[in-house]
Amino acid sequence: MTALTADRATPQRDGLDRALPVAAAVTIHAGALVVVNASGYAQPGDATAATHVAIGRAEERIDNAAGSDGDATVRVQRGIFRWANSAAADAIDRSHIGSPCYVVDDQTVAATDGTGARSAAGTVFDVDAQGVWVVTG
Image 1: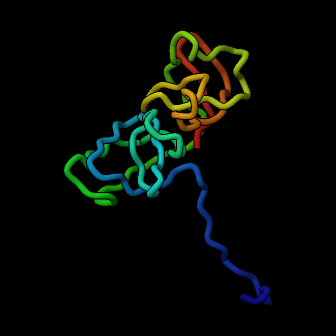
Image 2: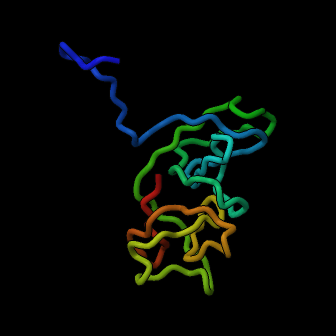
């Protein structure tokens, strides 16, 4: 491409809300922590692969349990969301604010990466009695 010689109407996306193709054989519940797997498909957050990337919160329930990769799409929003706090040695407290936290499941985050087994969920923004506020996506 060459440099502009006239004004350009540059396409824009706000980046807060997007639709992603869903992985095969999964159901994503509205409000779930969503990750993108190594193949680029959305699925519910889980602790089974450190290579998953947390992308945000599902804005709707999508049932692709009988489908193949990409047969369905899910709307996902990025932002600061409150997730459930893990327990015992994995519990997050105020000393973790500003630090990474890790996906346990589609609604729970932990202070540790489970010896390299968990994907990062985002950055701890705050902690209260109801859970952990995480900058996700």
